[in-house]
Image 1 (tube, rainbow, N blue to C red):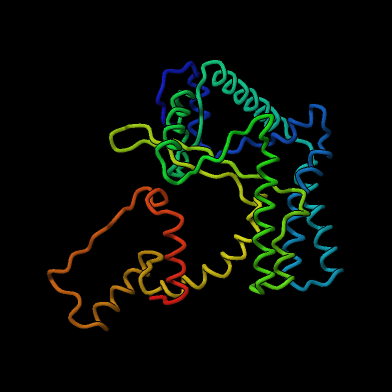
Image 2: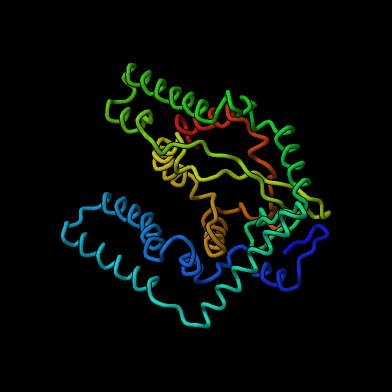
Length: 311
């Protein structure tokens, strides 16, 4: 854990946090069942996302109905056996203990206006710092970045639902224009239309902290899940088309791992004569904040050039 502020956490709490964001306290589902929900109700609730994922998976492949039903029954049985059984005493004591640790950490964070977040480098590390400082850094990032455009403030008059409705209308209007110009057929218009969907939600941006080489606090933006975003279906469709196309054209200049690099270097040395010389230099470039330095319009122009005349 990176500690960037004075705090009142105990050694016991710090030791728990040093396990990192990837650590999941065991058996907390059983502890929750001690409250207003029964364990069976909680297990049923946790099974819903798995059922949804299975339905999507079965929709992609031709599966016999009886096999599908048997598989779902076996999954449900295995799920129940895993979670509905009684806890051993040792595990139950550990679960209660770790629940109390988590609650005490939350109390200290709220009391002292501290923030605990995983670091932006995606390592198994927490950052502990002042909430006000991170909020200030986040606001400065938004104000100084060319990647974001101010649209408006969400309040009682200009609600999130109002902005969402405007986005939905804009997308459906664009699809209607494409259909009228016969650039897409009716099936695609209906597939990507979102006016009748009820689970659509605007994603939000949040910031993760990181330290630079001089130990200064920096922040990096992240977006919440796009799965309920208005553009998720359209973006997923475009990704399915564009990613294989790009990967096919970039294979010769992309290294997947060290073994792939050695194979391509060997080809470069043996098949293309006189290109590798004693004076050849190898260099590594790291581009910082690429998304801030390349505008959306520039990306669209580059994509158009690639689709029309790829290298």
